[in-house]
Image (cartoon, rainbow, N blue to C red):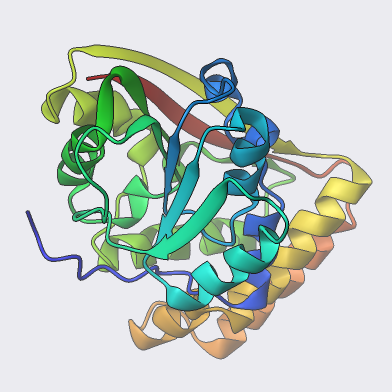
Length: 267
């Protein structure tokens, strides 16, 4: 398997974690909810600050839940998120070499992980290793090539173009959502259930949150640093994009959809 050299292109600025902390099992893993039964043991790969992981733990208790992330500072934040939840723990780990024995979990889950790494098939093979024969491996990833928004704004197009370029520069796959089925089959899964779902941001509250978060993220996160370092944008360009996000958030007919591909794989 390859060395895990990929870094998370967006980094862990507060604006990034603000987005991650919004995520729950209901809004980010609805396709998996019927598998989250009491007493199921779950591994959450790339758990981030742990909101989905802790939600899983509450749903499967007394089953045990483990969250793994490569960033130690995020694992520390996840442990704070889990304060008082007895059946969850968090570890620093590598998706290519998961720190767990073979066949240890009923559900092995990864949300928004595979599009950030160079070898998603190898990661799925490793996730399969730690899944019990009667369990499932589940993954959900954005398809950045299928984003849709209104009204049109060249600065927002520029923002999404920057995301795609920075992802590729870090070995990632901006069209991961549509590739999940193929990756799962290449990883040796013959029983794969594919699906898709959306995030839609169109209410005033949702636009304010999403647009404000991205206005901060595009100038302050590691994404901004990488965009400048790779010569993809200047700081002036990034400020113009941030202003476009604020403008979109204030637009009464503003609308944005994020498309996700999903797979549930049986070993």
